[in-house]
Each structure stands twice: as structure tokens, then as C-alpha cells.
Amino acid sequence: MIPKSWMVEKRRWRNTNKVVLSIKLSSKLNIKRIVNAIQRNRIPHRNYGIWVSLVTESYHDGVTVPLWICDLHQQIGGKIDFSVTLV
Image (cartoon, rainbow, N blue to C red; front, top):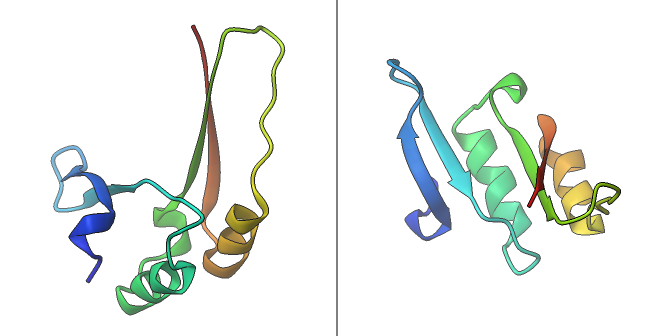
């Protein structure tokens, strides 16, 4: 079971029984708990990922993914998605 305190959003995926769960990651989270939750629930790699969001006022900008995110991805696999929003 994934702790409710981790959840930012939980909703149904379109009109299916699948659930979308959003967790705001931080370096303070116990990464092993995330890894264990994914393994215990037998979630296929194709069904989850890490979402990196950049909000910027500049047309030319970039994002550096922290090392702990790279370590998490190395342990859990899945996709890495990027979102860029120009404000």
C-alpha cells in the first residue's frame, strides 16, 4: 500500500479501473519505501514514471535533475517525462 501522506493527487484514468497517483518527490522521502511500494504492487515499468516540471519566464532555460532523482530512477525504472511551461 502506498502511504496516503505521499499522495498529491489520486484519480481514475479515463473510464477505466486504473488509478493515476501523483506523489510530490523530495530528497527527504525514503526512496526505499517508494521502491518497495512499486515492487509490492507489481506495477509494470511501462505504467509509471518520474515527471519533471520546469516553469520559466525565459525562452532559453534548462533543468538539472538532482542526483537523488537519478538514483531513484535507476532503482525503479519507468519513464522520465519533462514538462516546460513558459509564463
